[in-house]
Length: 110
Length: 112
Image (cartoon, rainbow over all chains, first blue to last red; front, side, top):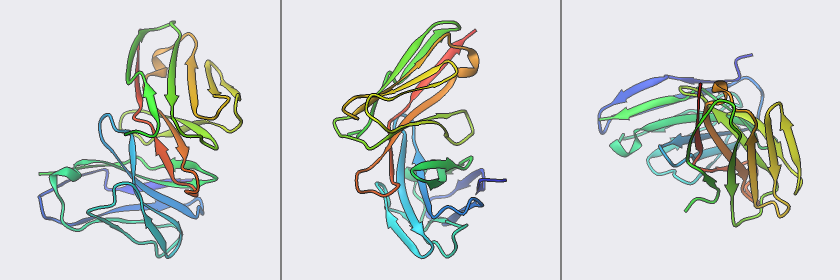
């Protein structure tokens, strides 16, 4: 049972480039979310989804887009990367508020 | 401003010592959770406390939820190097379905 799978694990982007962070879960959870983790700030919610076709903004949504076409997948898109988006990104799926996290994507924007 | 404030942010102690990590808020939470995160990995849920005053034990780890449901603590007895990691408290926002807000974390180092 894989749980939550994120790809890639590491990525370096140039300012202005776009990319998609992939996230897939095999636990049939309706709720999925994306967080970014920066030193001394814990995890901050970027976007979340309560089910296929439904997404909403979290605490720090600017510069990021999401979609949820299936229960399993919840990709995060950076349309025009900025150095301020250098961070570690975590995808999670949840059941009854208990979150299961992927291994993270370490993104560096230069 | 953090909705959940953890203290201390950093803690380095010797193997065998006891320690307590605190998670405080001015808001009431329906439940609070504790996660542990190791380098290069995502957070892993340790426990959820739901009832005010509740105490849960996981081997040498004791978790308590404050009576007013605004705070929680994690106490480790006889710490071991394997306890080293980042400890995060988290709670669901009222009316926020399953949206979690996290504290900034406590980085714990246990020295042999």
